[in-house]
Image (tube, rainbow, N blue to C red):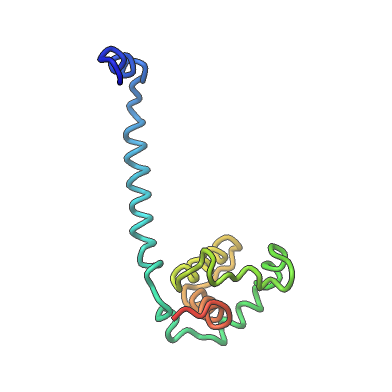
Length: 129
């Protein structure tokens, strides 16, 4: 149990930082926005791959040497990077991971290209419905 004096002492010990509450509010808003923005991606099923050009996806995977990059990260033929029960557990997150590779590797793929690649990965490894 705290005495009334200790509460006053604690209040005096914490200096006032005018920017802290604004920074905290900004951080919370950004986190909430990210959560709301990514929620649809987590909720999407494999219907996001409907109409995807699988031949294009296969071509892009070969052209951008995805398997070689993945092999350098996980060894073997690179397929060990695909973990259907791992952190990629929805079609939307799979597409998001392909988009992350696109951005990180500066592959300059268009959104329909990213979807095509993700659709091939879904067909071959993840099998989201």
